[in-house]
Length: 624
Image (cartoon, rainbow, N blue to C red; front, side, top):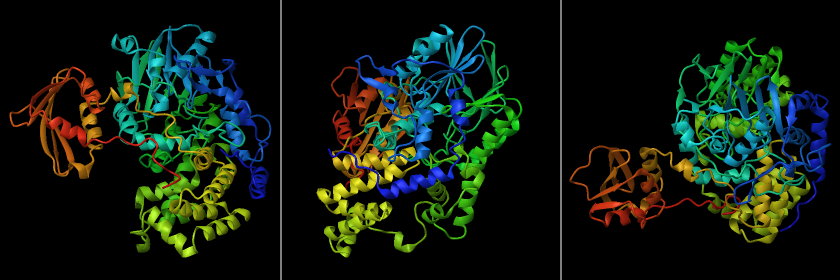
C-alpha cells in the first residue's frame, strides 16, 4: 500500500492561522489533566486471554511537543491531553482511571468498599483499571456499579469487575437510569452491523497510529477491542431528586433522558461535594448526530438539563467530573464550565432554527453560522468529537428531515447513476481527474473530493482516480480539527490505497445478545427478513419459551414478521418449543443442536430461516 504523503502548503497555512488565532498560551487544561496523578501501568498494553492486544496506550507516545505539519494543532493539543493515562485522585475518596479505554472509569470509596462508575468497553480494560486502583488504594469489596447512560463504553466492561453470580447473590448492585437496558440493547443490535462498520471509520480503528495516521478521536483516543458484556440493572433510577445510600455513601440523582444518550443521568455526592455530569458536559463539543449513525439528539433538551444541573448543584460541588476527559475544580470554574457547555448546545439549536426559518438549508447554515467569541475561544467548546458543521445539519434533520424543500432534490438519482451522468457531462473520467487535480493544487480539497467521488462511482478500479482521491482525503484529514473527521478521511484514503478493512470491532457480543427480551429478539428477526423473498410466504407458528413460561404467536405474511405474546392455539402451522437462549442460537443459524421441539408442519421453520439475512460488516463506503 502507498505510504502517506506530506501535507500540502494549503494545509500548512491553515494550521498557521489556527496557531495564531486560538489561545494556545492557556495551559490550564494540562494542569487539570495532570492533577492528582498517582501512577499507571508501564507499559499500558492490555491483552485478552489469548494474548491479543485489546488496548495499547503506548502507541500514542508520539504525542509530545509541538504539532507536526500533518495534524491540526488544536486536535494535537486535545489528543495530547486525552492520551494521558493512569490513576488520578479527583478528591479524597474519589479516583479515576483515564486513558485505559475511550472512556473513564471512576472509583468512589464507601465506608468499607467501593462504587464503580462506568466500567469502560471491555472486560479486559476494566479489569486492568480496577487492578491499578487496587494497587494504590487496596482491595476494597465492590458494592455497586453505576452506569451513567446507555452507550457501550459505559457498561461493556462489566464482567471485568464483577460477575453475574455476585449480582444475583445481592453482593453488588447495578444502578442505571430508566430505559437503560432497552436502549443499550437496541443501539447495539438493531442497526449494529451498519453502525459497527461506520464506527471503524469514525474511530480510525484500522489506521496506523502516528502523526500521519490516527492521533485520537477527540472524546478519547480510540475504542478497546476486548469482550463486551451487559448485566440487567438491579436498581433503576427514575426521578430527579431521588437519593440512595450505598454502604454509607449517599448519592442524589438528576435524570437527563434524551440528551447525549436516550437514557442518561447526572448525580451528586454530598459528602464529597462532587458532581458527576455523565457525558453531557465534557471538554469538547459533543455529537448531536454521531458519524457512526444514531437517532438525532435534542440540543434543546440537553441545554435545559444543564441549566437544571447548574440551578440544583451550583455552589454545592467543589469538583465536577465526567465519563470522559479530566475534572473541573472550584465552584466558580464549575459554574463557568457548565454554563459554557449549556450555551454551546443552546446557541446551535436556537440559531439553526432561526436560520432555517429564514429559508436556509442545513448545508447553508453550517457554512454561515458563527459561534460567539467566548464560545469560539473556549477549549471545552471546540469541535474535537462533534463539530459545528455536522451538528447544525443534524438539528436541521431533526426538525425538517432529509429534504431541503428544493423540488430538484426531491428525487435525485442514486449515487452510481448520478455519478455516471455527472462524469459524462464533464467529458469523461479523464477530464474529471484533470479538474480534480487543479482543485487539489489550489488547495480546494472539498471540491476535489466531490469530483472524485463521482469518478470512483463510475469506475472504482481507475488507478488515477483512486490515487488522487486518496491523496485528497488525506489532506482533508491532515487539516481536520475534529478527531472523527480526520479518522473518516484517513480511513477512506486507507481503503482506496489498499482494500476494505471491514469492521475491526463489534458491539453485539454474545453476552449482550443474551440480554435481548423475546420482543427485542423478534424485532431483530423482523429486521432480517428479506422482504421480496418472503412475499409469497404465509406462515403462522407458536414459539413456546419454556424457561420464561410464555408463548408468542409469530406470523410471516406480505414479507412482514409480526409477533404477539398470547397462549398457544391449535391453529398454528408449527409449534416451536425451546428456551430463549436456544432461540437465539437457532436465529443465528444453529439448526442441529438439541433443545428444539417441533410439533406440526416441520417445513415451516426452514421456510422462515431461508428468508433471514445477515448484515454485511464489510459493505463498501468509499466505493460503490
